[in-house]
Length: 131
Image (cartoon, rainbow, N blue to C red; front, top):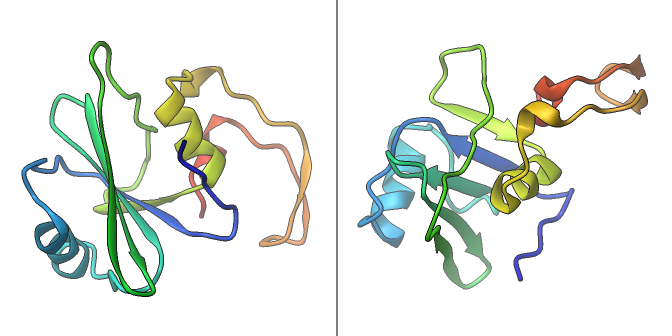
């Protein structure tokens, strides 16, 4: 069972990733393509072209960890993101929805206090992406 924390940042690599890449290849994508530090403790998420495989790369205090899952049937639904950047920050619950096969279009959030704006907001399905 994979445990996701709300205090961890999750970055989705929006291009297709070669699932043959291991620790060094994925950390190279993080550093060179996403312009982020793979040693930051953030989790970096990679999907293949068919969206039936996912890899999560994480630096722990003493080395890299990779979580790799291949679906036997079906595909992962990725969030629709309006900007053209190569990465997007996801909320931990959004990542869990993706991994569990929940349709992202069906998610509706109720009003909650949002610390980033210091006000109450109505969240829609686009709120699965931080920003």
